[in-house]
View 1 (tube, helix red, strand yellow):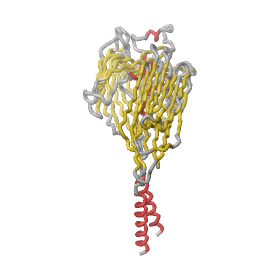
View 2 (cartoon, each protein chain N blue to C red):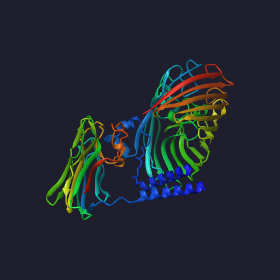
View 3 (cartoon, rainbow over the protein chains, first blue to last red):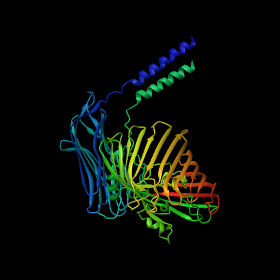
View 4 (tube, helix red, strand yellow):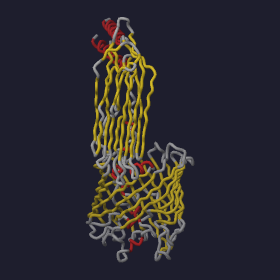
Length: 240
Length: 398
């Protein structure tokens, strides 16, 4: 009898816990609705070069959040006859609406957060790599509501740099209306011509698959780096 | 009561985890890179390296240095290839330039080549082919230079995946395809070689096709200019062929090979044209222990002062893999040079060798070994029946 009773209590408890945990999260009172967008990534290659990735990913993990990620790789090595230059230029214009889902909400705050993670490598003889600047602007018609800039970085003459920058703007008040997000980014690598075998300079701001490992030195300084979060990412969030 | 509560709590927690799981981004593995050695690593990321990689080409090689001590003071011959005692001996400085063929994932024919050169090394003394830098063998007052070069293998290759399960055609100078041991030091478990290997052909020049009929069965057929001869008046048409049975999931494989020429010693050019019949059986005893048995019979007619010369070799190999970096091999060989035409001393040789193969780094192989050779009928080792040697070689792959 005790066993039966214990089993009944246990099953009841487990079902109750499941019911509590299975409840969907309360829907936010302010949401973002994505509208039309124009996204462009322009690769440029000259000489002994490689570009990879070149993605603009727009995701909405929650109704009140939008995440935009730009990822790409540019590599330039020493061509024996001509200078080498590789670049990827990213440009995105994304329209969106901010909607107030509950009548009691009269105003909301918009937060803009940006981060850039990646690697810059160069060879001592000749070669340079740079990234950025990473820019994002939210405007309402001609009026800039909020903007964010992540500083550019560059390496040359054998310098190497691992970058993990983050910037957060103070929340700004917004009303329910139409807005435009404009976001730009660039990765560039260059190398002067040389008859001598020289390792390539590279700007790597994309997950692993974008860069064929044969394009960079076997003894590269960032061997084994985790690359899944590489790229320039903007997070747009609204809250009452 | 308590066990039930614990069980229920565990159930609820495990279900919570399942409900709370969010789809994880797929963690795809980075592209696999084939084995790359020092030279290709050095070029990786350069225009020159990209040019090679883009054309499926590789430049690699190794240096094999040995030191042998033993009961002979001047020469360990007819034992080899480490025949020089009490001196540091660069056996192989090997340069390999190759373009590989694509054997899977395509129905289109692909073309490649390989160029292997001993540049230089003492092993050239055994492998040099008549008509191809073979004057080095008499350059030192009628005796061989200690070090020499030998373009030991160079061929063009075509792979046609739509014939059978794939046909590979090679044209050029090619390693002989029979037996357990081979010419390149990195492919052998022990530093020294069996008599069966040393006193039979090393290379052919001609055309050879290898066809895979099923997953288990494949055969080879080749038309050659002779054994260990390049373009030379001593050339004579020679057929080589083999049949191999090696089921992919099986524990056994069998290779039967023949070399069929005219079988007559060319007295006009003083050149040896043997007929060879060779059988290799390999058996995987378990995941660590492997056994191989080779039986080779060869003969030549028309040998001056002898007539028909024949010989029989039976080497056995037992290899135990202790760790991925360390293995040990024992070789027991019986080699009967019935008339003494191959080694210069007739009689039955018995040779027992045991050694280790240790790779402290991927590019370094160290192979210490102990060996005892005995000829029952003759005294080939500085007028002694037996020879004891202790040797070590180090291979650095670059």
